[in-house]
Image (cartoon, rainbow, N blue to C red; front, side, top):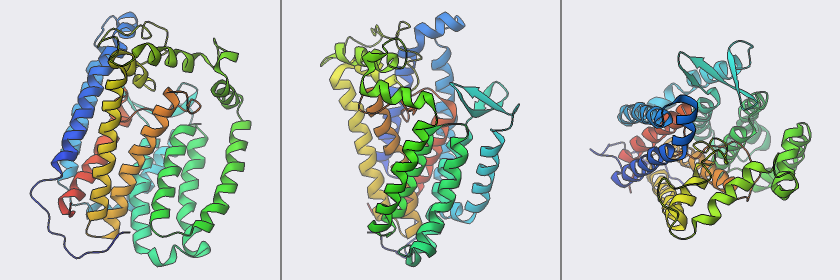
Length: 372
C-alpha cells in the first residue's frame, strides 16, 4: 500500500483543508462545551463559563503546541521514539502509585499538576504510535513472521494495555490496541495471525468484562437499559432522550433540556447527545461529515508520505482519532456499551484535547512532505 520515496522536500504550507477541518471541529467543541456545561458550572462553581474558559485555555495551549510541532520535521520523532516511550511507561506506572495517581469516575488515571491534571494513558497512545511506526518501518520484512515480527510488535502494545487496565480504563485501552492493530495490519502482517489473535482477544475481552461487576452492568444496560433505568441504564436512556427530541433541526443552540441535571456531566463523554438535541440531525451529520473529511485527508497524507515511517505514523494518528470517534458516537447512540471515551476536539478535557492537537501537529508536518 505504501511506497518508500526519496523526496523529503517540504512544501511551504501544510494541508490547508486539513487545518480548516481541525479548527472547525475546535470551534464547534468550544461552543458546545459552553452550551452543555453552563447550567452545571453555574450550580457547582457559580460561573457558567467555568468549563468553557478552561476548554478555551486547553484549546489555545493545544493550538500553540500544534503549530510548534507542525514545524518540527516528523523524522525527529523517529530518532527520539524510544526515549518518549520510556517516559510514557514511567508516567503510566507512576499513576498507579498511591498518593500520586488521582481517582476520577472509579479509575486512577490522572496525575495532578498544580490546579490541573494530566492523563498518562493519553501520552501513551501517541508515544506508542510513534515507536510502533518506527519499528514496523524498520522491520517490514519480518512482519509476516509470527515469531520474528508479529509477536514482537504486539508485546509492547499488550504491556501498555495491561498497565492501563490496572487503572482500570478499558475505553482508552481499546483505542490503543485498535490503533496499533490497524498499523500492524497495514504494514503487511498476515490475516491468519490476526484470526488467531482475534480468538484469544474475544476470550480475554470476556474475561475482562466478567472480572469487574460494573462492566457486566454496562453490558446488561446496553442490551436492555430499561431493566435498570435509574442505575446502569440511566446514562444511555438520558442520552437517547436527548437525541430523540432533536429531530431534524434541533431545539436550538442552548435549548437542551437534558443538560438540566438529567444527563450526567454532558460536556464530556456524551456531548454529542447534547449537540444532537440542540442542533438536530443536520448538526450531528455536519460534525460526522467533518470527521469523515479528517479521515479522508489523513489517509491521503499517509498514502502520499515519502517513506514508510511517515505513512504509518500518519495512519496511526488518523486511525486513533477515527476509532475514538466511532466508539464515542456508537456509545452515545446506544450501539455500544458505555466505555468512557471522549469525542476528539469536542469533549471537555485537557489531556485529551492537548494531546490530540499535538498528534495533529505531527500529521500536518507529514502533509508538508506528502504528495496530495
